[in-house]
Length: 216
Image 1: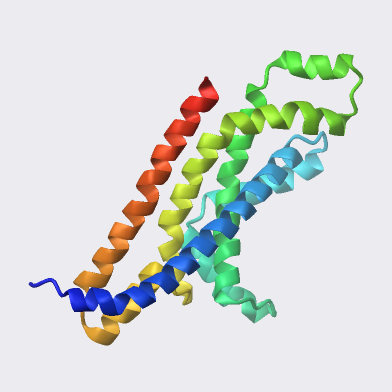
Image 2 (image 1 turned 90 degrees about the vertical axis):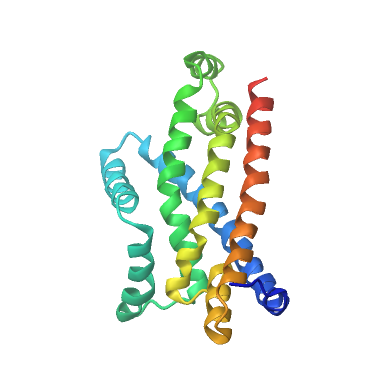
């Protein structure tokens, strides 16, 4: 087996397109998962069990079913019910929804880690409930969970190739298409592997540095 740099050169335009799609999925999926995760957490803390019970059932179901199954369901089953979305939109929603059930647990842990004295102080000052959450509890909780949320961003990055099964041409999808067209598999797949390492490893180092800074 010989390494063909010409194949790498020919693949690079496709790679940049795939990288752009991957980063787009990652950014939008992360934003959705962080937002939905916080919504799930706040709903689970409401006094009404008629709110907590449905939210708990939905999040447990999503967390305990594979992302791949969810992708197939959203992309191939929902259109039979008249709900049709683009492959990219479906992929972003699926990955954001799936990981929101994990970020929900991160937020929950962060909120529970806020000292009880903070709640008591807010009550003593007669702060409205909304003001207590936005000015006292959430700023402290989110600061504690930023490193954990960052770990899920890396996990989402590594799951983006799954979107290839619903025709989203991210990095691996572009590499697979190029390989089938040119019968050269080693070079494009190696480029993709190196790209994932070059994105994930610096991100993990950044998260460690951020965690140390937040601890101090």
